[in-house]
Image (tube, rainbow, N blue to C red; front, side, top):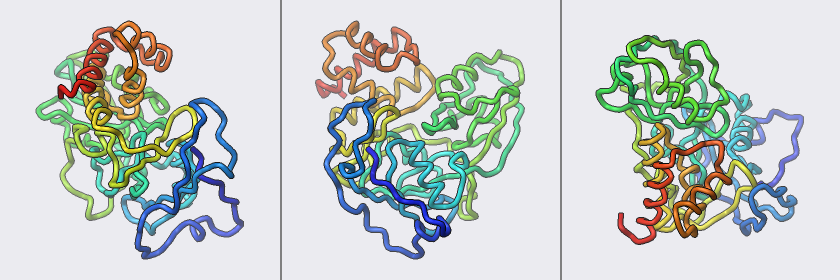
Length: 329
């Protein structure tokens, strides 16, 4: 849900939003959760919770304060405003670490005590890759604002042998086709459909790094950390960001939700080559009260019809949700 509106000033934006050498202690007051459903207009400013989050640029910057966002795109806009950037310079955000740590990737929830680090565009690179195997060994995710990037590189895979391709790299073009604005599953499908035993060209943009971040590339997280499991931060409440409808302040995920979301996210990677905890959490929400796989499949089509999930995948997700309900993980 929107968290209040700031009036623009004629003075420098940085001067009003940045704080030098500040001790960060968390949020500034929590309002009540929204009661309106997804897709409805945001409530008036007087009804919005007053939440303030602290942020820095991951490669180094003063501390900024941000508020008044209801989804990831608006969050990037607020961060850009605080640091006098363009929103499309931001690739992704991590929580409570400046490192490119895919286990701490900001997804659909932000703990009310979390510190946000924004990773912005750095070096551009163009790489030619010979596809010696059907699978490249990449897991793709996206930032919720039009940028797909690499979340994991499988050991011993085709891409693992191309050392200039790194976890965190934004995929900008494939064989000359600009893919900015495409969702992660579309990018993963494009890469999968590239013919075997042929070369292709991929243009990448890596996150800007500070000197202390210049280290051997990581193969990425498997989604098994706090952020990947949907349990973010140490607070008891989170701000849930939604692609449609207002954000809401919610209790931390239950044990059932944590286990179910992690399993569904694993299935997304296995079947579709993507990881997306927000998507996994939405699927768990859709399936928690459904009585059989057919009912679940119909509900998924209504809520997430753009994805065209395979039947076998839907059945396995239904089974995973049922296992989580019964505590069988």
